[in-house]
Length: 259
Image (cartoon, rainbow, N blue to C red; front, side, top):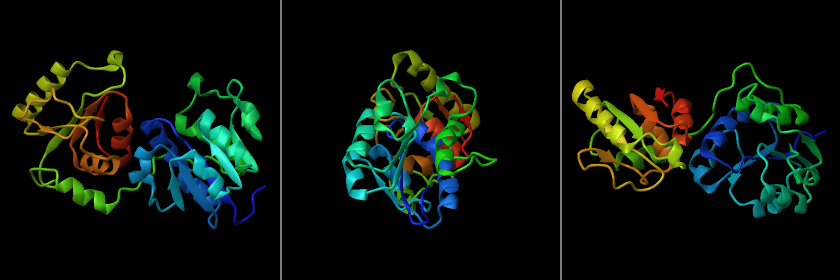
C-alpha cells in the first residue's frame, strides 16, 4: 500500500511508439495519486514530450538516476534488464513488472508477460501492472503527450512557408528493418501526386538525414526532435508512414495517418 505522498517512477525505456502509447496511463496515475511525486523514465529522445508534462513531476533517461530519486515504487511497463537491475540495486521497496525469463528475481511483484497474445491494446496491458498499485483502467485510453511552445517556435524557423496556412502532407520512408520499408520510389511518386493533384506540399521526415530526397521536396529528415515533429504533424493534412514511432505521434496529435 502506498501512502498519500509516495514517490512513483514509471519506466518505459524502449521504442518511441510504445512510450507514446503508455502515456495513456499518466492522467489515471495522477488522479489516483494527486499529491504524489511521479517521474517517468524513458530514452533521452522522449525528453521533449515528457520533461514538462503537467501530470509528471519530472523525467529521467538514465537508470543510474533511480537511486537519487529514491522512489517508493517503480512500475516497469516493459522488461529491461538494466532498469530492473538498477531499481533492485537502489532498493526501491515496490518493484512491479513482467517476470520474463530470469528477470523476475529483480521484482517484488510480477505478472506473466502476455502482451504477445494480442488480446487487447498495448495501452490496456499497462493497466494489468498499474492495478497492483490501485490504478484502474479508464473507459477511454488516449495518448497524453505535451508539446512545448518553444518547439513550435523552433519548428517555424525550419520551414520555408507559414505552418498554419500551408496545406502539406508528411511522408516518412524510414524504417529500422529493410523488410518493413515501402520502397523510396513509391514515396517519391506519391509526393509528386500529392503536390500536383491535391495541392499538398510534401514534407519528408525520418530519424536521420536522408540524401535520397530530391531538392524539390522539403526534407526535414534528421532535423526535428519529437516535440517539433509533434507540432508538424498536428498541422499536417496526413502522414504516410510504416508502423513506427511517428504513426503513434501523429495519432496522439490528431493527424490522419496512412500506415
